[in-house]
Amino acid sequence: MNRKQKMKIAGQIGLVVLGIIVIYLIVMLIDNRIGIFDSGEDEDESYEEEELPIEIDGQEYELAHDMKTYLIMGTDNSGNEEAEDRDSYDGSMADFMLLVVVDDTDQTYRYIQLNRDTITKVPLLQKDHTAYASADIQMCVSHAYGGSKEEGCENTVRTVSMFLHGIPIDGYYAMKMEAIPELNHAVGGVTVTIEDDFTEIDPEMKPGATLKLSDEQAYTFVHSRMDVGDGQNTSRMRRHRTYMEALAKTVQEQAAQDKKYVNRIYKELMSYSTTDMGSKSFSNIASKINSYTDRGLVTPEGETKVGVSEALADGLEHTEFYADEDALVKLIRDTYPLTEVDDTEDGEE
View 1 (cartoon, helix red, strand yellow):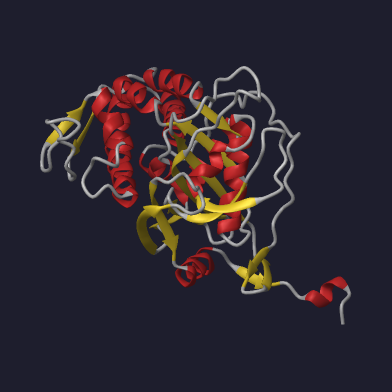
View 2: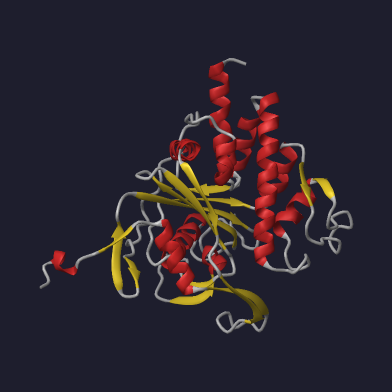
């Protein structure tokens, strides 16, 4: 295999890994080269949200230098997203949310994994694309609102931005978690060591067992929660990372043997994907992650509670995660360079 072919495969791998919601592992798989795919259709610019101000404790801030933040989502199959019209459309939940933060000035990057059960203010975006109210509910529900997959993603982007006190989100990528079996099959299975007890679902999946996951087991591993271990989403978030690390290793090994299979996977995944970014954006992010300094992955601190939700008013028990506000502000300040906005700049005395 010549150098040009290796460069081509490296770019493809970067796109695939991003597509499977593991952009934070892309540094393991690419060679600082841009991708080869066309960006596809232009982004629909009919939907424009007013940018939120960055505000902490009543003080308005702005970014001291250019930063880019991208939201990667994995959605479940709870809705009816293939409906033929807006009235019949029913959005799904966002099971997985990962922020990729790129600092071009300091040449660093960081990942922030968000808990889907985080209680935060969610705009109640209607199917006619209006949002006259908001509610303090689970962050994952934000994706269910609106009249299309794009609007669900945009509503989640706004929700996450509000949660981060107005930090802007510069792009999004969402993939249906139901694509995991297809992906697992395409790479010939992924091997992991089981840490949680899945035996109520699958007797083979017991703690301590090392298994090459079948396609069904792969979906169980990344999606199941209530009947697994402690039933907490924080444990499932850990399993997401475990699976993606093993998947990334498998992708790397398979790509070395078959240069065409990465392209096949990419094309298959696009049918499960919704994004406002083209391949050039993906490749640009990938190349920076390959050369910039990794500041690691962090998650907001907080407390998990289980009980009947007053906000949802459905009489059912739900898991709710309440982020520690002081810790969240510390995380924001540690991630983003903020400078105070001087009111006198607007002509005030």
